[in-house]
Length: 364
Image 1 (cartoon, rainbow, N blue to C red):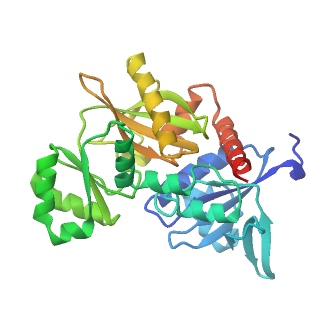
Image 2: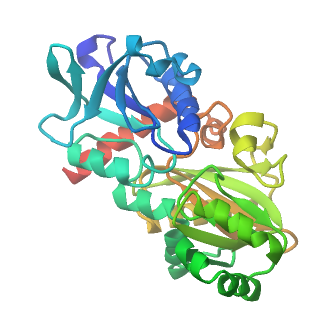
Image 3: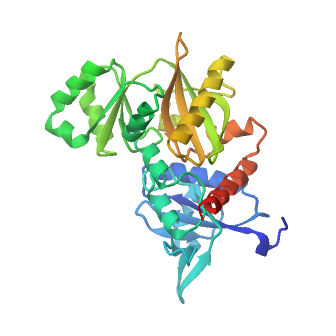
């Protein structure tokens, strides 16, 4: 492909978002923007503030994490049009609205209003090819209660769990705590059904601490999931592809915190990562097969990171969760796992954009 502007794909990278994972998105988008091939793509940076305001950003990539991207001198209001005849952005310039046609969108968004199907629904309406899972699979994988239910139907082993609406806890806290005690063994993990990066998650060792943990989770979402703690290795597998999906080597996390939490993932960077994971080959292969099976079962496309536990002693493979837009920061497991196979970070981004274009062609 030549370097002429006419031949370049016009790509928008969307970042930020009205989400508890806003800052993580800025880090992921920075890494993505630094690794995209400017000879192949004409890149437009679109930021969404925590209040939900859309801005076309024209400053340096370093301005994302520095916070400069919201400053008026670097931005113009713009938004993605749901009208497929626009096929791009509406840019609100002083002289009036202009349209900016796009070939593809990379939504580098995490959590609510980003990878939960809301953005994917807008992209579907816009008619623009986009990186990642479709509306339904994004919504399904974001909601841990729904994911658990569907994976149970596929007989994919998971931790024992239960879920409830937060208002039911307000109405009958003792009933719900008694159910947790009766059905699950401590320690348990209390999680919001819809949140990512371990936001709102607590490890609870005894009944007395359930109240605070449930209220913390309920602050993030109206549904709460409680899962039995699993003693074992925490491992992850990256899946890439549409219907013909492939699994990466398995990676292992040696968490430095009580569990692999938000600070461990994005701030401290002190967790040890082992690539490949310290596993017997047959166990690693089972993880890879299960990751692809779950990916297909839930209708995923483009990419997802599938997280597992491998139990101590009997080495059972237990699926923990599926992330449809995993972290893309410099220390994130998803790109690291593919880089282990010889695929560069930039090559991985090219592949994801190719898959987005292929998916659109297959459904047009």
